[in-house]
Image 1 (cartoon, rainbow, N blue to C red):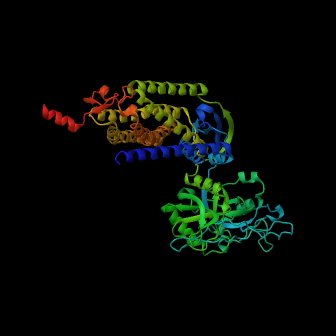
Image 2: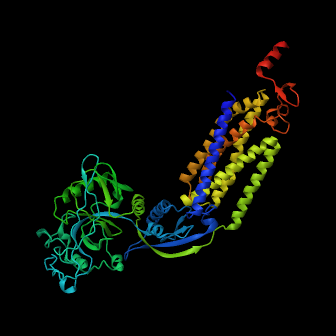
Length: 595
């Protein structure tokens, strides 16, 4: 029973490793045949080339761009690019103004948007809302008092104003009703306010008065009214000229609802957002629905501001009880408050898909760019190293592998083939893993990563050497081969775990603290270290355990690499046909007493 258990465990380990290889191979085959994967690892920017995008800050007249702003924008863009699954991208500053983004692929529109959009979400109270078409000049004459004048009712063919949407509230675990911040597409109605004019009239205090709070209708000055009447949200270029200042009212358009708005100053800024996640909304019973939401949580300052504005706005008439969430100066959603929100948790819904919600949540979570950028140029770039350096890298790997093979065969004779087969299995697992990651996570192998693979050959061989030397030490002590393999393994695995643990810790530190050019090395170092442990535990030790049954190894053939006589063990007798009978510690003790 003592010898059966290790052999049974060894067979299970080999079967498990075989299943793992088959699964990885099946995933790779699926990605190549039915997906957009490829049979070889994806290469990084330095080995394959890609696309270079130059971003230029979009500033107002007289506005300067500081080095600190560029550095902050660069860090945020790096996080956004990585969150979109683009590996190996390089983001640098060019001079003291532009940002250069180099991507090892043709970027999708989602990646381009993530790179250049400021994604500054702000919360502003709605002062007025109406149809997105401009008002005829004759009807857009503001009164002398500063109040917006009424405009004639539209004809049947005209677009009517927008009614206030009524979002359904969501519930929290403590029973407080949140504003769902749910986007509802405004529906034209003949009874709605006239096209082009705000849907609410200013309060008496607004007439020629000074606004005292963000919800005060006194923000609607003749200039604001004029800009509102002239705004045509059906023209994309009109959206580019929107003036957005935090402390002033904003005349802007809705992203998808076809309406235009007059909004008060910012009451909660985007930098107060603590976290943003995307997922399916749950109902009051805690059951997930099919509606996609972006869940926002604010920091302590944002929670206080959000609670204060919700208490104020919940008592106001429509549309002044609506809080607009703006992104890049445009209204995403503008729902009304149904109750005060004291805990600072909000949910944004509005016809998102899960992918679009995740992209938006990532942009909000990773912060807003301190500047808005526009794409100045986009060009294809050639590899910075090229195929020649890649060929040299693989040649260096082959030379290192050949030296390990020669050393293993010289030092361990036939046992060296266990080392060679283990390295082959480790190489196969590494190849499959890197290729599958290229398809699933867009991982790309750069020159630093190739270096990590080459270094891993030595680490992998070192684990086998530690194990084999432990086994040989046990044979020198007079143990049988089966006993030496198990005893040597129990001692060697602790050393292997400690050594690989140090390598893995170094890889984590390098990956977290080093620049992007070193991260490829750190990732492959960590990956190959994990695979080394997997191979040693699931292949090398189980294989050697099964080989102990073969007479070639069990009897200590001189070419096996496990010959006790060549290892310097004390011998007593030969059991015929070259079989070596080791001296046990008990027998050695008995012989010593006789002397």
